[in-house]
Length: 61
Image (cartoon, rainbow, N blue to C red; front, side):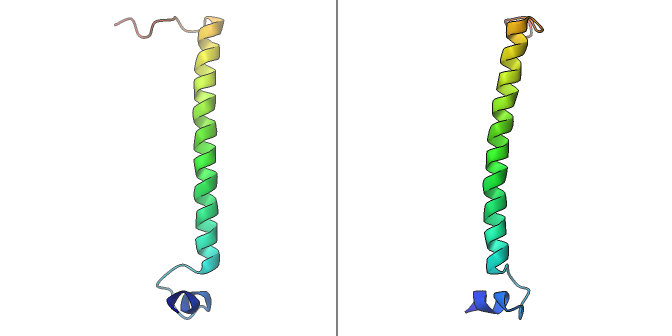
């Protein structure tokens, strides 16, 4: 019943069903984008090592 009240615009104490759906979709997209970013970071580091742009073996400390 409370969800119906939000959906009808009679209360601003929560998210409407449409807003909840949008939040779920945005969270899913954010997870995907973060995964893609992590893959690109790892690929960039790998290609940099392979091309000799950075020395192998870390910081040398």
